[in-house]
Length: 236
Ligand code: UDP
Image (tube, rainbow, N blue to C red):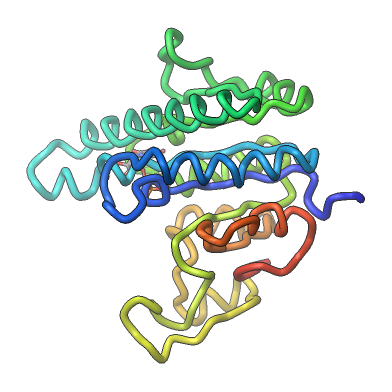
């Protein structure tokens, strides 16, 4: 069966790797997530993953607490490398070939990010884990996700979160929050719905890159998205 989205970019936030504890890495949670990734890979989809780092350090928060913002952001970018290595280790143990490519050079651990090389890995069926964000302070890994999605010519960006999709309000706070199965970029802006940070969202809109916001805790959901099933919220 032909896949609806043969090449996708999955954005995995740091939070998704921390599980219930909300901080650091919960290896049983990482193990479960890698099963989801393995399923997508087994379908024959070409898959790039951008890792967040918020489970270890967020630049804005650290700078509010007194750190220099630029140093804090570099620390945040290093956190994404830690996450990428964790996901790589578990994926490789389950038999999926991977490469970590970092926007910040650290050749003992990861390949430097080179677009053409990333594409070659994807063509060979390797899962490419993009670490180090964009490599620049003052950006987020959401922006890195859009950037890499465009660079590898993915036809969809999947934002894996711990909620089912986009709601009219935060469902964890407001019980009357309404789930939105589909919306346009313009709708999201006019209604002030936060899908990702404004920079990242603007870049997506400008380049008409569709986004699916979905709950990564639903078993098999990422694979269903890739096959064209409606899961979560589609923004296009
Ligand atoms: N970061 C950065 N530039 C980037 C990507 C990330 O400076 O291109 C830093 C920033 O400090 C951010 C931290 O890395 O707070 C972790 O990334 P993010 O908060 O996007 O992770 P997530 O929320 O997805 O876990």
